[in-house]
Image (cartoon, rainbow, N blue to C red; front, side):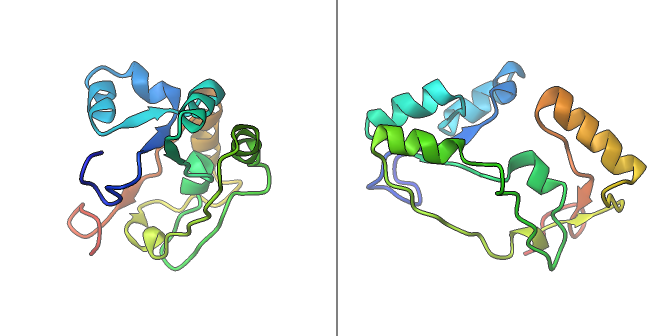
Length: 142
């Protein structure tokens, strides 16, 4: 992550351990400096002075992402706070505005719908679920 957005800070972005089980995808993530979000990995990094980037809402929050909304999933996400306190690390809250305006969900997936039930089942099995999204010409909106 040399010379990146925060060149004076040694940091790593956390992702699910399942991402490291996919050939080539794993290598690409490692080359970008991503690390496993397990408790042991995060503790080791923080105790070693490396900062970590946590996407608190994760996959569950992604299922609620729609243009013009900001539905956060925070009420049960405190593990990262505990680890930071145990490691003596500071917490710096950051909120990204406009992120949900990047893509549009192709199919509505309100809670209780069949699509949402399928997405939540995949989330419970694999730890992530892929929202069905599209931007302008298939690319993110600018």
